[in-house]
Image: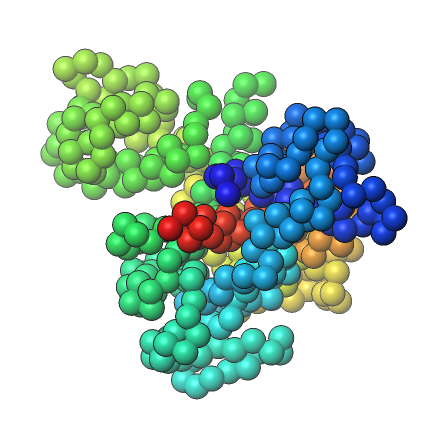
Length: 210
Length: 210
């Protein structure tokens, strides 16, 4: 799979839903022109998007529908779910556990760990919050690929260190600070304060240019 | 102020804290070389960052410390706080209300509204959740610039419409869907599912290229 841009990735579920919605007696091939028209997207964009997941598109014939659906599913990780755990089961951690939409991308939050949990807690949703000290034993039995940090900044590095020991391949850090991990681990930052600040800066710029 | 990139904006509080930490008897000017060295940043980056907020930097003299602090504060909106409200006081909405770090960028969440609130609720933090029907009267008395949407996708457009009526200038949408607002209103999307999906896609790419 070639490198897929974030915005492109966001359109993949749209293509997949669309192809699934085609009637059973539809032709086995479909052109990018038809897809673009039905979805209200630009034809160049559709060709670029689908070209990134499948090499089956042919001029005047189009894409094999079945093959394209399979490639889209693979790209979206259906059938090979990536398991993640959360460190920090405060409001944000719990909000992420309840957040709809991760599974559409083949990602599943399997458990959360919290320093303040004395024992295993089952949330109304059925998901579990476990005491922090149970993390090493948990990941021995349930390998996880991504660790999500939703602790305060002061505890973020310790959480990161635990996740590194748990052999995650990527870390998604919501704490408003940098964390240090070996270079082989991908670290992505979700700095919500900065996102809101950027929006506020746009408003301030608009005001000062009036 | 020229257009300030997001990453640059994130460094502004660092520069400001640094300048504030200088001793009272420090010289009235400071060079980008010294700042870069003390903060472990590249000199070119420091010059570019500070050049975006202040035109006072001069070769061999540097920046006027007082003037630079003032410009950084202005850029960060200190003294002209931007007020925001949240629509949807579920876990995510409440997590944002408790999130530290917004105020460092001159942004303040002043209230949350929820369709399920029958009456005014005061949270342990002292912040208030108000019934949705109180939104129009609230914004008459407390003008707000940004509306944050943390309702499920199915309720996002209705929330957006309410915020448009409330005359916000920008909307920050956490619901995993597009919303339609007049073009004069800035809409920013915080698609958490997509962020996690992008991270998962990187892991999958790493695996398939091995």
